[in-house]
Length: 84
Image 1 (cartoon, one colour):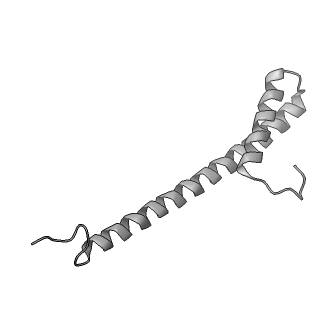
Image 2: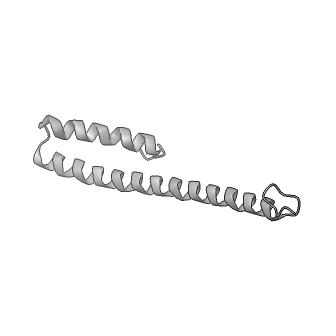
Image 3: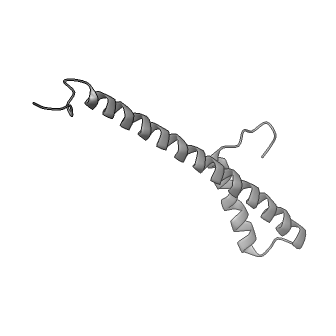
């Protein structure tokens, strides 16, 4: 990947698939294998970070939605408000 390209989760997983295919082929020499494993490790760490960030974002959205529903239900006349 060139410095001008921005890394994305999708491009990282595509590159990981290329690395795995190359390693599985058995054609990579010792130095290339080491370089591919290092690159793969960095990509896995990047992907894990991206997944974690998305997961946190989804949790925040769900929490915000829950708080909004609770606040709406706690207001007089709300759907879940106290009935007499």
